[in-house]
Image 1: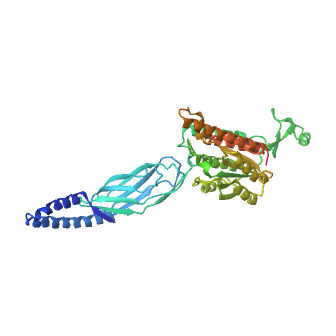
Image 2 (image 1 turned 120 degrees about the vertical axis):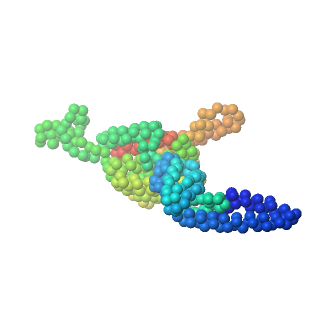
Image 3 (image 1 turned 180 degrees about the vertical axis):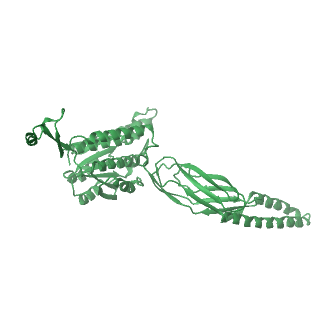
Length: 440
């Protein structure tokens, strides 16, 4: 516990200090100051004991969700119980993460004797990660406002901030809900498409492909029987997420890395529902994480735990490091989905050199996330010489990027060039297309 002077004690000491110069002219003033100081000290000591007893009989606990969505509002409740026989008046403050909105909040409270109250505050955290809330500071005023007592309650709690599309679909915007609804429909329709893995025999129906008639079974039974096929399952899908410098660029829905992680979790869920195995790789100039392919829809939680706190670093991405890791650990033919970006031909040449060996064994899908700022600069009006220079640089960067992607396409890499905020549906569409083409 800590104690500090209250407003009335400061005023009383200031009044006595103003009287002190008069002791030189009127010595009897010393007795007046002394008569005022002694009762003040006695009352202050009594108030100290009063506050000490009150703070010892107050308990604070918190209630909050363990997992929330990025930039989604959630509630934090503090239950304050006064077990003392006197009323308590003061303020309570919860220590919040620096990235929380708001990051500082102090609320006045009034506790009746043997009473309790609950304070509720709305917060949102716009950056993914693991954060800690607490401790809680309680400051009470004495009955005469001569002292203020303060106590720290160590009721800390951790909270995980995950991508909002993964945590809950109820609080999303109408556009996001429409996008996910479209995704669900696409997944259901495309997953029922024709594959090459035999599923069953059934009677011929109008509209069936006559080339799938099983003539031996048809001759034995005496009526047309066809073979039905399903999309192949139990394939390996490795999703590689770039955490380098380019992925830190901001978009309308967070950074490019935020959009990549949102889409990664939904793609992993779709792949696992297909019956495939899904793994994850994280890299910038080094391999920051690698998890071998897992099976079962519940494995998406493990993948989420691996990437939910991932943040972009100011480092140039080195594709060679993650490709070397794949060469060593992923011996089975797989579909490799790489979420990154590329800006120049030189980087593309290094990318293709690192890819040369792996491309002979695996199928690669490269999702190139555009930088919205470049498009904004290109379409912005030119008012000054500086605006013209910026537009020229933006045009040059976009031209180099298009050449780089064109070079990758000619190298046999499946390329998806999209806006970061619109990545999810095209990415899963392309994934299903590749699965249905039986390229694995």
